[in-house]
Image 1 (cartoon, rainbow, N blue to C red):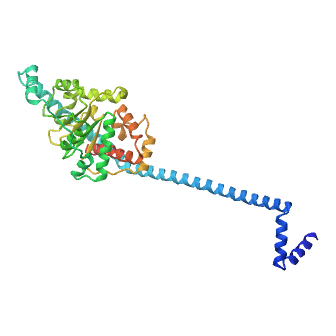
Image 2: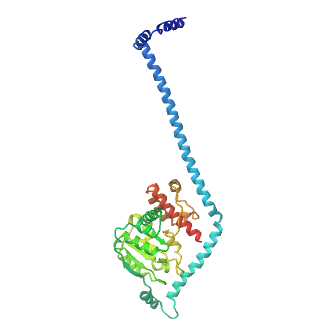
Image 3: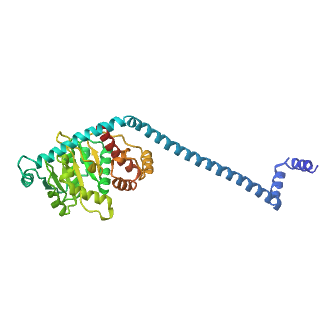
Length: 359
């Protein structure tokens, strides 16, 4: 009854603009009405804020689910890509073992041929080595101000691959590992790389049949900052440079007491070139100047870096490395921006995968 009477009054007042304005003005100034209006406004605002919060939560959840889906897709793509390798694994291992046995014999032939020559004594053999087969040494001066990336591009490499190789080399040498360069321009690039490390970089040409390790004792006693050995595999490197290999291993295992030098090898791809021994290969990263590689996406690289742990299998690609070498390499990789880490990881993985395919 009261409601209907109020409605009639409102209808009567609303008949003129002046009447409705007076009513609204008086109502808005009335404490009870003002309080009621403010209460309703607060309720509406609170409701809208809650709706917005719910929408933001849903959006955040969708983003997380989307990121997880991307990670799953990337991981599945990687597993799919690795599937053919796992299928052919048994065959590759058999071929690898057979080839390793044959090539290791070549190194033994070089050593025995150098030390045993009919009635020639060991002392006479050593004298022959020192006069005819010792490493030829020369020093380099800085190769101008030309960046290494420009030198790499000058031999036909793309800008992206040149950048990837330069960053990889920096990480490898910082980690104390041996940087191994292979390809048609390997000698030239290894020498150029060494010249940019230090003005007093010592470069050596390796001959065939070198077995005397005394020469490197003298070199290491000088505490040279960097060493480049050109055609390092023309003689068994684990024999003539074993003292150098020892220092590399010490530097990797004890980073706080790291000593010089930084080490770069170039490899000969000719018939006389020996395979790198397992103990040397395990502390080395190869970069190829002739082969193309497939670059990882940043998301793929991040997933791999996150999933790495100390329990990796020797059958996986990272199993090629000596564990302390892999540990320090990963530590330096994780300090890089994600874009650079993806480039370096692409080069390192390509090195191992190419080596497996060769076998």
